[in-house]
Image (cartoon, rainbow, N blue to C red; front, side, top):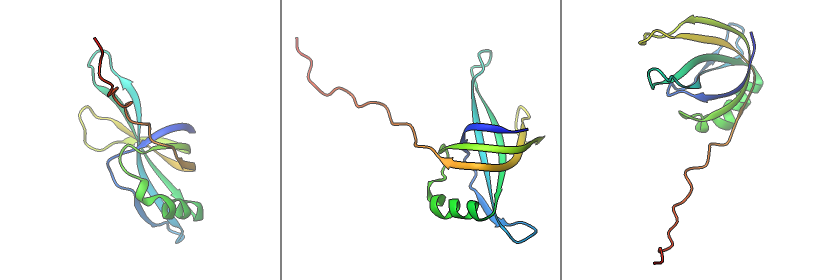
Length: 122
């Protein structure tokens, strides 16, 4: 299964190591914000644990390691997605795991517009 779209960095920090062949490997935990459940009023989120291996992943890590903080939006293309039992949570939520085909940073949304500071006239 493939996934293409916008996901967000989770609070969990990225990890860097080497795969069995000695290639650079970057692992990220990403979140898909699916919206609000109208029955419970709670936000629905889906977790993705993805790995990216090779020189492109290493170049991305070198260029953007300081930018990969919670909530950072990413444009992703993933492959080989599989559902696995997720970390202990309530309610239990599966975790999707896959490999990165493409990953790039997106700009964060601009903050709320500045308030009108002009004095009101009567």
